[in-house]
Image (cartoon, rainbow, N blue to C red; front, side, top):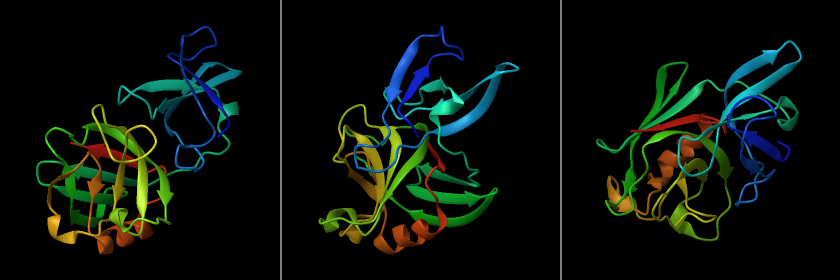
Length: 194
């Protein structure tokens, strides 16, 4: 993705919502979730995208020239805060399910529609487990995920605390579960937190 000017509606006259950088705060290539293509004339198309900004669930429009490549993702991760579970579906079929830890009541895991922005595999701190996924979800209050309050999906070196309301907003799972999820879930996967 190139540095992208994002507008509130399709068209160059629309208000600028934000400008997205080429990289994320964790050093990976920036990714957006494309929701639809909007043709406003035979020669001008825009992509409706979900944005990794506050307020959560913000939508914007970018010109195709800003996106380097598009790919289809057939997976969708669902996190249920009530049952403290994460379920990955591929083409509508459940392929993975596990218990999770979520945010404490004063640092809640936000509800909404998001997506997986990055996959991180090397940490010096075992607190995050062997793999972490960065998401587009942002904590409106606080989080221990670096870079401005992004909510992560990651392992833990304390498996005994799962399930529970244990984090600053991140979604934690046992290390064996995050390793299994990493084999099944690509970057770009939509994420629903309810």
